[in-house]
Length: 460
Image 1 (tube, rainbow, N blue to C red):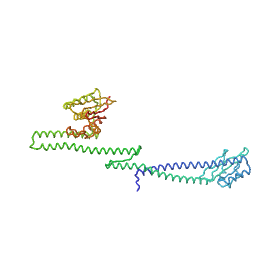
Image 2 (image 1 turned 90 degrees about the horizontal axis):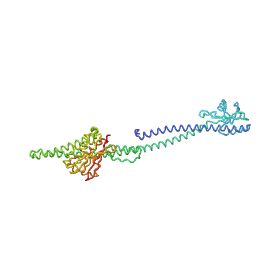
Image 3 (image 1 turned 60 degrees about the horizontal axis):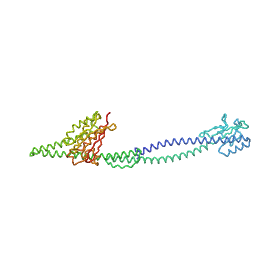
Image 4 (image 1 turned 180 degrees about the vertical axis):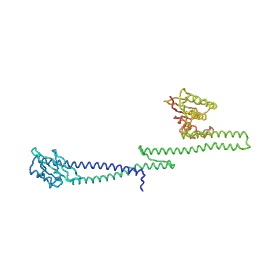
């Protein structure tokens, strides 16, 4: 059973219908034009033949000439009747029938020298005819009537119709073949893309579509391939995220459970119990911080993270950050400086942007040695404010830089327990900066330090 919902069949039916309507219109117009043109040619030829007889009669009007004209037309496809001024018949090439007598009996007025058409209704009448006046010695003498049977014209039109029908059948056949070819050529890539999307829906992202050019189908094919790659990447990220989060949760929970079991023993020394409880507290705090970070990221992903942006004078804001972070730097033997000119205004959420700065500066403390310097500076570039946080820490290898903002990604995985990082801080930083319609970039060199560049729009 034919499936009428297939796009190839719909395309074929619509295209065939449109082409049939166009073909019928063109064939009707062409047929009518050719028939009308042919009738005009026949009438023009008939009138020209009557004019020729007129010229002969005007040059030599006698019985012999009249007889010669009648004999000439008796052997032709046309008929001639020569009459006087009162339309009385002088001579004819054949015996008149009723139709010819009716035409001759018609009252005629002033006729031009080159004659005129008397009857052109070839479909309903037996003859088409013309009339041409002739003069003898500058006086009107009579008329030359020319007749041609419409049977011959209808036979000609019938042959023309047969040619048109044959041509229409050929064109229709070629049209159907062309439509089948075009529908196949059009639907084949669509079928491939349909199968590709079906594979995607089952979780198979190994989509292999050929290059289909730069048209709409080609763009759709490229979009599907990009979608497959993105879904494959997201699937990998999801698997990696689940593996990472399970690892990150399992590690502190293992510590908490282990030390809690030991602390429950009655024979354990109180000082050791206090030490174990301190470890449990620290691991619980790390676990709580990580869960809070996960909740923040989930809110950012769902666009439910509230950003209350207000106009802030950036230099004053950075100095307040400096005052809060300076004790931590001093405790670790590091230097923190702020370089900022006055009257630099930005549109930010102070609380969320403080979270950004704390995360970046906390990373600086974790991955820098004592006696190193961290600077915070601000500069203006083309209506933008660029905030630079630069340290003299360990630096980041080039191979790790593209992934530094990925969730749970750590450069030095062996230090994760010592530094207490979960690999979520920089992800949150990037999300928060983008929520402020800004951008963040990183430049780093191992052994020389790292610099973060945050770009925000400057208020006038």
